[in-house]
Length: 397
Ligand code: GLV
Ligand code: MN
Ligand code: MN
Image (cartoon, rainbow, N blue to C red):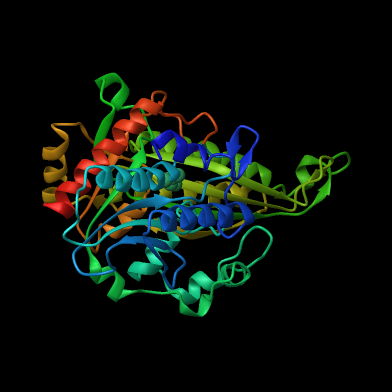
């Protein structure tokens, strides 16, 4: 099966109009997971679902020194087709290519699918790889809730998996000799360089903070301004403060999700819940940005008789990918650009435990986390050839 056929066999799942909504443990996600399992089995790969729900398709193995590729199949709300699935489909297509060439791995090779990479449903990014590597407490993970109050444990159980078993898996980690994730570029650095393929140098430190502004619900037509305790006002000031503070620190800050309660058009809200995503090239710049935003949120809330609570929901430290592995991959791919990125990846989590590298496929507009995300088929095919060459170098030589 060529790349386009394989790609087309996945792209109808979880489509919501122009984009994709494949939230973890929902029917769309389960259908994607089933698709992967069937594709893996049809290639005679041994499918293992680990205790954290991550899926591994093994070509020989599991076993020591394994070379692993893969990515994720979950999405942000109304996301693009490529963020995650491109790495998974390319992994399977690379296996096909290696077999066509009669390449024989001397160590186990696996294509992996990680759970809840986006953190779109339960708030904590890269949950599957973070549980695997032990950087998230399993009890905390089990208690995470989605917007409807469903716990991670209940959602996992409803999907037929046992949440009691989640947590670090040293044996599985000990099998991984190297991890190489292929991903669509999220940004627009390769296009001006005329390069279809790039490599990642590192990932900016980033995190998510939940802001809960609590005021008093009131009547939009009768409550005098002087009497209101309107949480929307400090929220609005906080959004502007985030933009300014991030700009001043060379960082990025975004409020992409906000819930006003009770949500009546003709009422002052009683509460506003909002989520800040902040990222920066260095830890201090990230910390300074968030400290500024938090202090402005507190000050403006007090001015309006509103209380504000802030809680960090997700934290990912700066990542520098393995230099020796990246150099080796660069040697195989012939001098491709090496780029920093502000986007998070399971590769960034695994990098703390195993030699890890990332391959990017050109995104001509740079747009991502949007239905407009795009990569040309020819570039995706170049990505598969690049990944196959890398896997061959690492696993077959
Ligand atoms: C994942 O794509 C992230 O960077 O949030
Ligand atoms: Mn993403
Ligand atoms: Mn991704």
